[in-house]
Image (cartoon, rainbow, N blue to C red; front, side, top):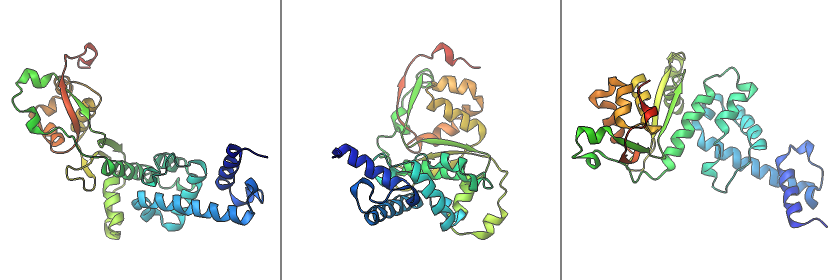
Length: 260
């Protein structure tokens, strides 16, 4: 008689395989029961992916998206019962999904949607605000290192995926037809202080590089040395206008942080 663990594993295997690959009566269950449970699982997980990647679904259509989602579900099972968090690996899967090979921007569009979804789910507080840095002199500010907020993401793409997302969700066929797909973008994605939908902001190359340095732990002084275009403080002000950092602390610059 199989153990409980063996029975659970057999049921898992039966639900994870295509109908033609599963033996009738798998795990001691009638074949019809296995089929019902399998279909319910596939429906729930593909629905979760559709809710998490609405622009991807809108761009490729329901039938194509469902086929792609089912292929993903069969090899990537949820790690928790919280289905809002499901789909972390879906963008990487899309990049390898052969039928989507003619849509090279689709994986980056999915990465943007995933980053925005995660940003919207993260509690925006605590967040570092301009008032928290009031009173610092120049030397004190230069020594600051910032702890990135968990909602903060950077995304670089050779395609205008932010515009593609907006036009697709609005079903704006005219804009979709006019989009120049060879327009690279550098994007900052983060939550908002009021906990509403995520904010997606285009950055110029220096601002993107400056933000990356701060996210990677460079002191403000070192980041400014490496990206002198940011000496006016414009990007830092933008970052402090939303939940980009949790906190800042003073520390001496590490030797390896010297300008390259």
